[in-house]
Image 1 (spheres, one colour):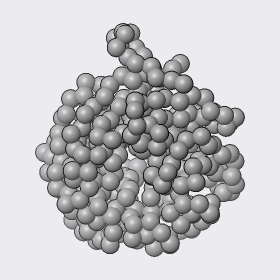
Image 2: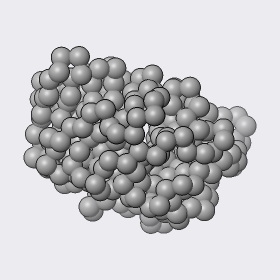
Image 3: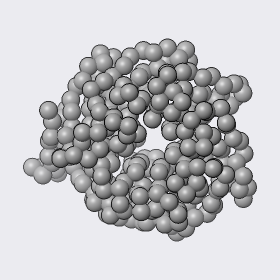
Length: 308
């Protein structure tokens, strides 16, 4: 089934740095270069709330497991924990010495995990008034670009070309070296593989336990941009943004390109977010966010298919 463009949201917040779904996919967050986070209904394009409090560009954000809180990170070196309803900061957490690039909640959203250009990963207890990190990992030799947080693991990708897995139950660190700067990492739904987007224009599929390289995917353009990737369709396909204004989909097993989704003239498609349970995908490009998905009957003739 082909995906079609279902909606375009003009975010009016400068360049959109990241787009993220909340836990059930009913809302989405956009992070802007205007130092604000915006909460949207992605289907109607309705702006529900604006969160302003950072002193620099917002680089990433995540919603809590009950959708009651948001955590965001910024070029101002801070992590902010927000109350979704009031729109006010509950905690401002400072400890990083550089731009904070990525953030994730743990499973019960009691801990926020952040990665920074200061080469550290920090864990913050957001339920208490403690303002210092409860744990700091300093093993990376370059910027920490992306995080995966599971029940008992923190997985951090870095521009030093390594993926570090911190096993919190066993108290062990495993380091898999790819040898090329890694800009984004995600885990397959079954937890058995990691997908690493690298600056050499290759996405690598890596066995989580052994670190073995299983497959490589090429065809998109990176051009030094930090371009995100994801696993879709029940771990059967891989999708990535591209510097040429499109998204590319590959078959996970075959490694062959399935299709390209063109999103108009120019603009790097750098951030994307697959719906947590459905088939819709959000993309960030330039100053707006696009919603693509399987056409429904209500879409009628308005939905737009742009494929190669």
